[in-house]
Each structure stands twice: as C-alpha cells, then as structure tokens.
Image (tube, rainbow, N blue to C red):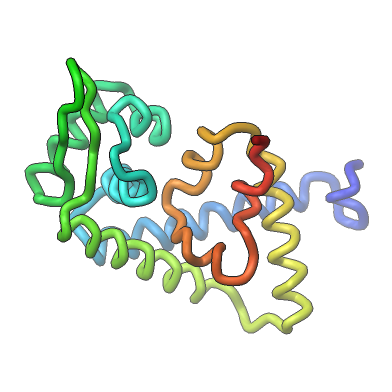
Length: 176
C-alpha cells in the first residue's frame, strides 16, 4: 500500500480522485456551455493563446493534444468568431494572437471556471484549505517534467490565481 493510501482501503483515494475529477469535469462543461458557444477545446485554445501570445499552431496542437489539421480547423473557427488573428512570420510559420474580443472571452472563461469549481468546495477551515492546497500542489508538481507539461496541465488555468500568493506548483516543478 502506498503512503498516499495509508489508513484507507486499497484504491479508495484514486477512486475518490477519479469521482472528483468527473464531478469537476461535468461542472466545467456545464459552465462552459451555459456561458459561451465555444467548446472546451476552443476555450482551452483561447486561454492558451492568451497565456502565450504569438503561439504557433504546432505548439497549440501539442498543448491541446489535437492533430495539426484539427488545430487548424479550431483556429479557423476562432478567427471567424473574431477571437483570434493569425500573423504569418516567414514561410509557413503562423503566430496566433487574441483580438480584444478574445481577451474579454478569456477573462470571462477564467472567471466562470473558477466560480464554478469554487462552488464545489465546501466551507473548509483554514487548516483544511492549506492541506488541500499542499496536496493538490504536490500531485500537480509530480506531473511536470518540461515546459510542454506546464502548458498542457495549466491550459485552462487563470495564471493570476497562482501568482496571487504562491507560485504555480507546475511551473515551479519544471526544470530549468
């Protein structure tokens, strides 16, 4: 039995985490669809581009786990919606930037996401909140091995939320 599961039946902690992840995913999907006509990949693309202006389609494809052609279609939708602009650099290289409408949408997505998940967290004591923060930070940091992990794991994050008091555990764990 691993130290994470001491005192709990085998499989309980992973099972509870899986159930919580489903609850959070369901909550986020409902909040996204009620708030915008964008799908979750579209929203993640906008947030990713907002975090990294001049992002390439290739890097966005890796971040979202989509094929190149799927990412191009996604960017086409966002450009048609007036959220993103493409800028050709040299040859076939394209850089992506948010429009003012795209920036407003990202702020709205981030706020909606945080508000939706915050409603799932019961009233915790200060000690419980610190413990939960530490456990979540440790779990996330253990999955960070390269810059690509930061942008994949945190593709829907409000970067300002981690900058407020504590550094992002994923960013802090990435070597270099």
